[in-house]
Length: 362
Image (cartoon, rainbow, N blue to C red; front, side, top):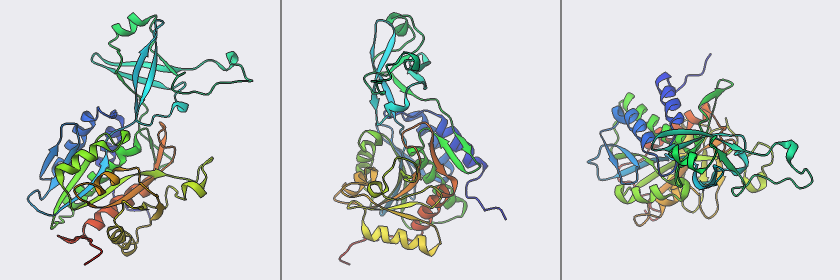
């Protein structure tokens, strides 16, 4: 008997369009417009801010506010320097991996539109094998086929133009989603699916729900820092990605254990409010939703930290989606995990009581 899926044809079509649209840090607005258009039937109103974070609100008049959150931005590059010969040196916009760059096709975003280019690399025949250089930010360059700097500039390319990879969404072996920018456009997708399920199942929440797609996470949680001050939530459940540590060259004694296909990963960290986390793990056990655990020491490195330490302290928790090959163009997640993150957030929301303080002293 085939497994009953949460994601339908419309969901998957939105996911494909959402992922294929570039949303580099600081330039997220086109992706946010797609996300808001999909979410619109399932929420009462929207909040947006100056830098592009978007929030779909259910029950906006309610005093008690619960956030479910992902982040909208993807890593990218900036044009940093153009040589007289027309080659382009770059700097990171977020944690872009220099080692995957050589031989990748890129899109340079200009006011005239997209200009195609490639990250070039010297042929193997020409390299000194006794002292081969590795790719690093200071030696990788983009070639847009121009003969000199003047021709590059005529194309509309200047210092500060943002650069993305065009790699598009596909499904590998029936249930593995592969694309660039699954970190963390999958988060925005999953929280939108939670809102869809609440609407389709006619669930009435006793509190305000703020379905939040923050910007600028990849450069320091900045969008979440801003939007939490606007919302002033009582509770925040954040979803992001975490490493599948079962692939080669990862030390599980350092990175812990998590594997795609084995369920959402629930975080243990100082920023995670323990009573809220217990509500989530109890919910998973009650509804037989498989889950894994991770210990994150001083900080989660996600928007959880921004929400938890804002507004005098917000009860916050982190549910992560296990992912392979983070910050590459072939990030991979399992459809089962995607659906189980959606289920876990959905069921947890139905468990939270209006006005619940999660205080240790009650």
